[in-house]
Length: 355
Image 1 (spheres, helix red, strand yellow):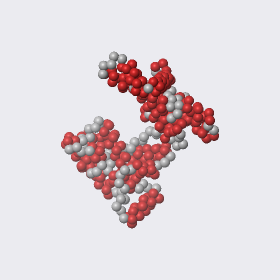
Image 2: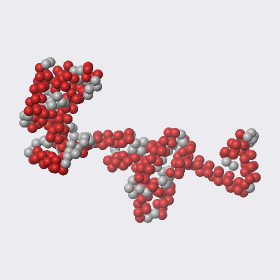
Image 3: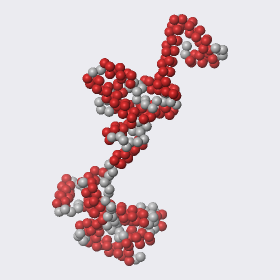
């Protein structure tokens, strides 16, 4: 009879619940049937002991779980501690990954080494090749993930093996593989920045990065731009005119208005970061700080508004690091003076002279 029945008899006060359960079983099932069930129970217990002897040799979980079938690992779970269960879960996750790959054979992945060997004994052609491929996968998983974790030393692994390991790696293990690849193929050093604080420095930086990347951000940066399309809402005629103007500017070798605005944003951000670093974040006047003004807004727009909200430290910093409006910046890029630029310079000089 089952363990639950024996436990029930014990709770009811039986002095020898196992013997009583056996007597009841013989009376209920008959001697032959009872002996058959008892033998099956002993066989199952012996099979479980034999399995656990292989899964936990010497009382410790085997370092290589790839040779056990899904069913065997499932039967062993009830006798494993939490750490061992996690290792089994890791092996099952790797099998799930392998089963999801193109051309995978889940029916082979879930077999034990012994079952795989028996299939190989009668297989031919493509079936035998698939079995050999699964055996190779297991061997490689065991080598790359000894004890269930990525090997400590990756320096001796070839890049094909590292790519194989990346499929099965946990996030932190993927970072280690990436670090090893970076060590083998260090990126080319980025040219020293000339400085985005000036137009000349910014253009020099862009040219250096273009040469390093082998392309220009003007060709692909729009793909990552989440700003609304500036031509949204235009009629087909207005779009045609905008396209022709852009083509004409490109033909003259000039920057388009969109490119100048993008470059200006880079310039403003570089100035803001430099000022924040040098002034340790003291950019706003007390009143502006209380009002929650965005300090970056001080680097664009009318000078009289910016100087009214700027800290004294920032005003002095602007004396040696001139604040540049979009109109002035466009002048510096194109080399052509404009009335808007003249107005911006006059306003800035007036604010500086008041200090």
